[in-house]
Image (cartoon, rainbow, N blue to C red):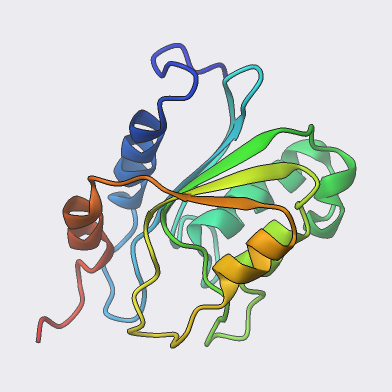
Length: 169
């Protein structure tokens, strides 16, 4: 789906789209409500969207995007790099996790499998250390040649949506 309403390079608009997706996620005290969008940059085409718990299981937003892409292309998620175009961007309201307490594959590792395809990860906020201390994901992504860019100015709104359902201290 070509993004006719979002201009190429309008990172805030893509982050707003990701935030609107995050609002679809059910509020729970045990996870963040996150939205994600995968964009083919040269054509300004949205390839997939996702949000926390959109698909069955304890799914994260980025994971949902990749699961949908794998289904669209008829391949296992591990084989996505073989079928996706280059020059992709991932917009995610919260920095991809580097560790999953559930035992699922962390989102950073999912992105790293696509390091030859995803060039940039745009994040609305850096991952809070409530569930995972010392997120090493940013360093891992940068070491693999994936640029991590903080889209500033939406932190308050993103945190409000992300933490809905959490016990306020």
